[in-house]
Image (cartoon, rainbow, N blue to C red; front, side, top):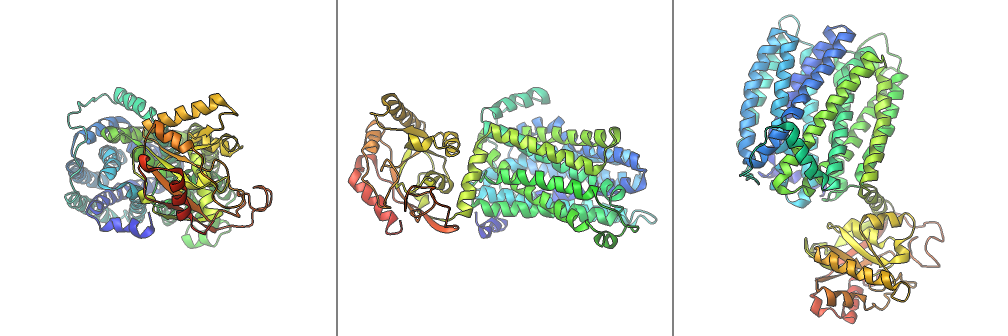
Length: 628
């Protein structure tokens, strides 16, 4: 989705009231949470403050573990717009209790309010992500998720600034407490007003019988999610990101006071860098995804989180705090800029990591259980964030590690988790290779791709110019494509991994391998019966002179067995590339062309009965034109 259309969602009633509702809710949570954490960090001894801060983090997310299973069922059973309004009314009541708790000065009463805010957020979470696919089109989903993540972290940023700054004014006269209280109640009221304008989102399972046992219900939906590995491991990846985020954000107040020698204002600055980074990364992800769920950005995000996390641990560990605790003194000290840059980059790579995972989870979940899938995601998010709090307590309070050492440890753990997930779902690595190819060596222009059926069986017939034709087509077409390809090409190292992951169908001549030939046609027939989109290169081999070679009869045989529409397509501009046979064999010289223009063009679908080899070849040649 282009940046322009991404922001145009903010002018739509399908999105804007919901966006404002979730923005105000996240802002309110963070005003209270960060005001409380900053007051604890700077009023108590370091050891006691560390314990209470990690306890606060655990209490806020514990309700997600306890109540998310029920919340997901309620969200699938109830109209989501109605449910959101009820949740926002509850926020007004909790806010009133929170005001009283702040004025009481009782830290444990404030922690109780934090727990109740977590309960309210646990019921909002499944609705928050399940409502988007109901109100947005498929090509708007990534852009919508990018804006939601941006809005969430901007609201966290603003809540952090407001809560942190006003927490420093809570001494004599309680000026800060009065302002915090007014902001909490006003924001809760505005959130409810915004929620009243959210369009209706009908319940996908109105007859659902609710299971109130969180353990059995969570296990049941986890089994459902595991039936689609990409959804299950997306949940694991999302949960791991929230563990990382919780680990960083929870330790920043103590890092500021005990490592950097700073004040409350420096806490706000560091949190700003992280949250601005996530907001920017989310929007960049939406822009780079081109309106599709671009999983190739996830490995980039994971690699960035590890590398920059290591750099952050090293830079904070080597930092020598100044004698003064002001932001100006921090800025003037060697190493301060590197710390700020590293925190911002962690946020940016986090945005690259999280937005495609959320979008994939929404897109590939069954609509009737989508909210329950998201609820299970929230349960695991909660579990992972509780683990983050426990890791903080164990490493910092029990093992006496420093905060920079803790940052190094979780960065290395991120590398291990990423390798595990990408090994389980090779599609991430495949999409990364496709994305890198189409954003480094080539500038790919699409034309007529809307003519490809959005669902149902069909065959793409395309010219064959280079070894990366399949990758460029897979990167351009929104639907997953299964390629029918010459077996020796299918078995090329590295590319074999990609083709196998995308369930390509290798084929060779009947004389070379009679059994393999027969099996290929069986797989093709079954794939079309299953509603797959297949792609065949009718020339049967790469062109050696740049011209379109005569089409072979294989496609006619396929259509005789399973009549389906055929979409003629053409690749333009690949002749002469490193991957083509111009001037000798492909790969025989160093690449000479980067960022060159390539076209992917689709023609009008042809009925199976109308497909004749000569006419199909003329169609493909006409689409290619003179631009080989």
